[in-house]
Length: 326
Ligand SMILES: Nc1nc2c(ncn2[C@@H]2O[C@H](COP(=O)(O)OP(=O)(O)OP(=O)(O)O)[C@@H](O)[C@H]2O)c(=O)[nH]1
Ligand SMILES: [Mg+2]
Image 1 (cartoon, helix red, strand yellow):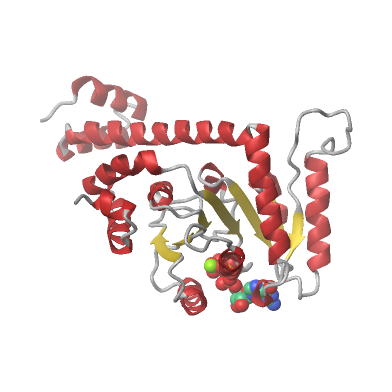
Image 2 (spheres, helix red, strand yellow):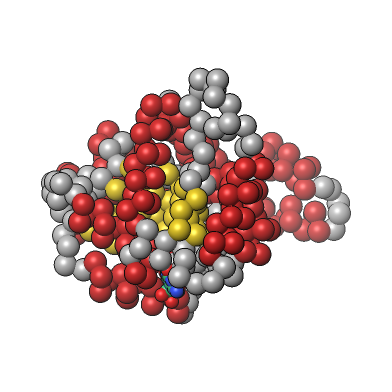
């Protein structure tokens, strides 16, 4: 039986194997993903992003636990967690976070956890996170929770993979938010001020509310507006105590309904497919091209550019014209 078929039958070991193939970008991964593709589209993908230490992992755990506790149909309302970690295996935070995760969530067969290394990719995700998410979708998980690397920058990539993007802030992280406000507000569907037990939380919440209001002052004020507009709610949580999780789940549900009813869900899906096709095409073309060219030949052009014999643009022209295999 093919790997894909085993996954469709609910075999978790096969799923884990496929995810490794995908992460390694080997042909078996592509083959299985193609076979699985018609089974995707059922999951709701949540992206959780924010500066390092704001409490993403803790919050993801709580959301996963609550989704499972509130599930009316435990067999169907399953949760997959993808934690994108910095490549270094020595990053204490990530490892500690995972240990806590294992302790809280282990034992529930409706929860599947996968860490993946970002391998130096920027933007908070690994190159293959989108494909990993698709595999989990096909495997039948109702919810996919993706925690991005907290690089402290606006992790905009997540917005092109997730249906609902949750941006987490915490008191004391205000400067980061300040510097990246524009990017964060652009991608946030739901804003959360975590660590509401610490002083400064209310201040952080008000700062976000104000920034949102400045960014889109007309929303909700114009009662004649027939078009439905989504204004990201700003919520507060204490992830370590599980406080504020139910309102957060409600906001996620509301956003999901909004995506369906406004048609924005379809628009986003179209943009996502387009983006993914472009990325694949670029990768494939480059790969094919590089196969036709020898390293000494490439180096020759590198030398020529270094010597300023000709420009990088000329070098690319020459490479494309000759593809000389010398
Ligand atoms: N006081 C307080 N501490 C919290 C809260 N939520 C998380 N923490 C603590 O904040 C620290 C960081 O939490 P994590 O969940 O690992 O944060 P993270 O954003 O996943 O961190 P990275 O993945 O390393 O970027 C831990 O020591 C948590 O126990 C909260 O609501 N209140
Ligand atoms: Mg974390």
